[in-house]
Image (cartoon, rainbow, N blue to C red):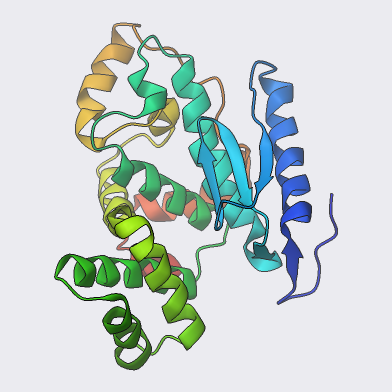
Length: 256
């Protein structure tokens, strides 16, 4: 385990990769068939899971205060749902069912909450992406959106540039709008008594859950091979019960 103690400290991509490899190894002990490469690449701006592999930007730095949340988001959500999906009889479960992104990203953000890493700053950034996507679609250019975030919403120049760059990359990355939608829909699902474990079967869309429940009942679908280790944690169970009682998105960052 890499020692991480100083608040406000950052670690390099290489050290983060070692932490990720350690976590993946812990899951491989439960499921030896899990195959995942951790790659540090110059052509990746941050971190992402692609086809079951973890790709880390060579020049990325990671705040020590958000490492557990990042691992829960990328590995214990995106990687696990991909792997569980590969064990199902239909390829859609690991490739992604139609309109799966909102639930997948909502589940990943919820994982950040369950490990105690969803901060007001993180939620504010997610909300800012929605505003940025809306402005992009409405026809605003890069400079207009940057100034909107900087002057109107009070983001620093660095923050405003990074958020704008993230959304404008490749001509427009509008997927960033679904994170907030996804976590909001997930909270409503849990408040209605929905099963969190069911969502780790693969990359699912919320509208397909009744069908998935039917397929499970008929024993067409298999039980999850892996579920996040953090779900066994006492504090996590407490946070999950709190969320299932009926919370809004903003209430996730409020202290009890």
